[in-house]
Length: 113
Image 1 (cartoon, rainbow, N blue to C red):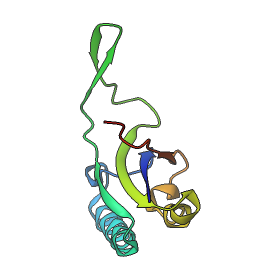
Image 2: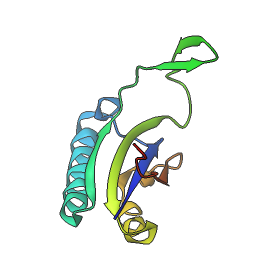
Image 3: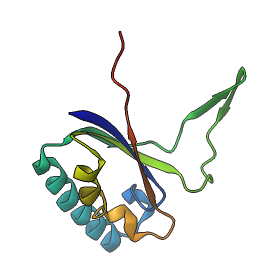
Image 4: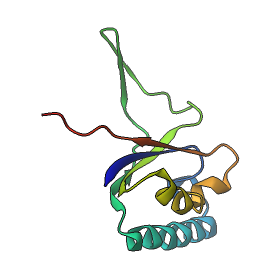
């Protein structure tokens, strides 16, 4: 089995950006989706990401811009035989209901150490 890093960009992950009724619908959709994801047995872990962070480059440290678009909102780690196994699961992600959303799937390299 191989491990895959799934990066979720854009869309709405943080329910604090929504009105009360939208927030409820949002949480129900994500709860249903994550329940299905967990039932597959491929999902190892994942989490929404805070809006606050740091960028480190060439000896400089700066704060993340809240306005960057699309913003990296969450990650998941799956273990599966191949990409084709997990892609059908990801295409049903509620994040993809937003026009600015995208999901990147990257295979991790095995630890050498």
